[in-house]
Amino acid sequence: MAALVHQFLEASALRFPDRVALLHGEITATFGEIDTLANRIASLLSRIGLNRGERVLMIMENSLENVASYYGVLKAGGVCVEVPDKSTLSEASYYIENSGARVCILSKGSAQRLKDIAVPFVLAPAMTFTHKGITTFTWDDVLQCSGDADDPVQDENDLAAIVYTSGSTGRPKGVMLSHKNLCTNTASIVSYLGLDDSDRIMAVLPFYYVYGKTLLNTHFMVGGSIVINNRFAFPNSVVKDMVDKEVTGFAGVPSTFAILLNRSVFAKTEIQSLRYVTQAGGAMAPALTQRVLQHIGNASLYIMYGATEASARLTYLPPERVVSDKLGSIGIAIPGVEITIRDNEGNPLKPFEVGNICAAGSNIMKGYWQDREESEKVLKPWGLVTGDIGHMDDEGFIYLTGRKKEMLKIGGERVSPKEIEEAIFESGMVHEIAVIGRPDEFLSEVPAAFIVPLDEKTFDLEALKAFTGRRLSVHKHPRDWHILRSLPKKPSGKIDKEVLKQ
Amino acid sequence: MSDIQAKIMEFIKENFIMGRSETTLDVEESLIESGIMDSTGVLELVEFLESTFSIQIDDEELIPENLESIKNIVEFLKTKGIS
Image (spheres, each protein chain N blue to C red):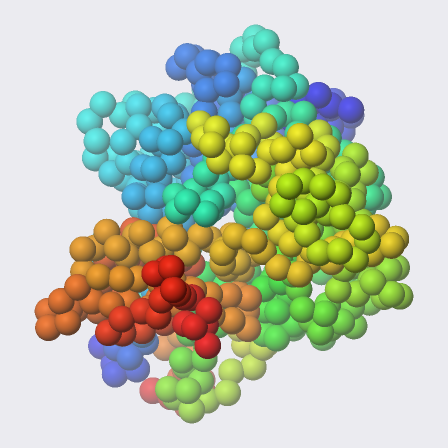
């Protein structure tokens, strides 16, 4: 098994140099072509003096360039910091400052939105950035690179990725994942899904999201292929692509399936090549699971559970048990992972007793980037404390019953209400603010804001919305705004969000 | 600009552009590629069109040719008798 993540690509490029590995609209690329492009990117990064363990920020939608950049950064000994392609300038500036990245790789779309970005080196399609002192490289410059730079010294315990995830403290925290974390988790997923070089997955999930990234690495490990489709806004185009490109697999979060079944031709379309479907990224209502089962023909449905802190995957529910007797469970531990249910002191609990879901295995993160305090809160001698609450039955099947931390799950993405509250508070227009989740048919949850204006007479809600719009990505914008005279409080003086939820 | 187009632009500005003053609305530009709307944004737009213009939009009609840009939406509404 590969010890370094980019060896998935290199090994497949050796075995199947001319096999198509990536399909995106009219674009196709073989393993050999992607490996060559990744080598050129690694050369460029070496030329500008990228050091082992140095972070490279990537703000791109899924694409050939994105895939080649990911493996290119790793080949150069760097650490990939991939963040949402729709990040605002304020969010991108935070990622640059927090990760200490000197190099940023942008797509055309993100470059146009982030032309005021301040970072020493940028690789992006040709355009002008406003900051003086930025050295820019284009994809033409990459193609001029020889691609034969010496391999840097690397170790499986080196960091491969920092993945930002919302924390209870507001601003996103960087989850540090090593090559070993990612390689072992990838191999485990390949084994329980039974993937081989005939598999082809449809990727509508972004690669900056760990679930999306597992689709890429698992299929590149086995010599399979990946179909990129960034147009889930038009789900029918995805369904057509699945038929035309004969995909064997599909992966989604609950909202993906809600949209596919409620507003597309998916239910009326037979996708003969489809062998399996996976679902993760939050609990899917059993009723929706039943509907998915009804419409995927003979394909198997894998319900899965994980965490960014676990490189992605922790449990899966074997397809036959979804149908027979375990609907509603998130399944059993994947190979190489041990799951335990423990009380707050870390003592293991008996079957059916509700407690903290904890996980141990070589896929568990090294910690949060430059945040020892937060790392120590979740990394215990018995493993990762996931923050999820649940129980295990007498056969080892796990059931989620809640979350300890007050997190929103918006379309599969974890968002801290505190991050939204802090952004709104910074406007200087509100006296008090509370953000809670409101149930939503498609996204599972959307943010709703309850505010007490600082000055009722001069308060301008539209101006506050505009301020928030500039600070936060679209999915974090509150959908409802409620203006109150005061917020309900607990005896301790804390805001009582349970009352607001009613 | 037609009233129809103005209504659509107003909806998009109010719901998706909020405060992003650098974002301009070009009637021929893809609302998805430009990052103005995402997958749920399209569904919100569809609900808005259905309720505002009292029309029914079928799942089969949720395709880029009908909804990708403001221009496409205006043309699509014409096929539904709205102009």
